[in-house]
Image (cartoon, rainbow, N blue to C red; front, side, top):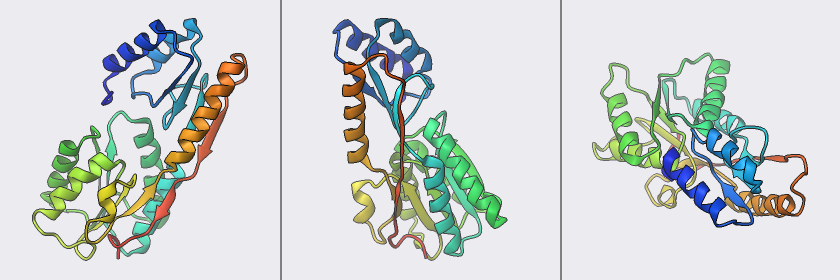
Length: 230
């Protein structure tokens, strides 16, 4: 739904009208009222990646821990001015920023810059270009999503900045291009297959027993080390 709450509500209402057996959804940042509005029709709902409240089953990634480990890896590479680009109005972005800031605080490093941008390629590129033109540009950047990273990488690559010598680069998600560029990117890979399997299992259980207590499963992201850090 491209984070469009109205589009999301339209689809949810359509699913309710079609009397589907259940819904697996990665909700938009402003979807809490829409999910609650469906409660009266008793549709089984499982949240993935994001959680709007505690009344629904949810399959989540421990974003705070993953961002903490990724930021630690950047710090261990010797970078001192580390910027973070995070999704605006994003549940996952907020959690990832928490882990990012925790690692920096423990190392005694303030974030060089923290930017909140819509999770789209153009906005990621614009944010990265602004960082590079600042008085104190970062020597490393962490992106909270693949789309933000795509735009940010383009902003770095076109002027020919050397990665990882001039600037380190790391991101959440593991887009196909991350292993094709030179150097390949260090990433946090989310356990997508496990998320899908667990969500289906939760939904089946919810359909079979609508009154069961909500279940929440938190999975670990996998740190994949490649060449975009020293």
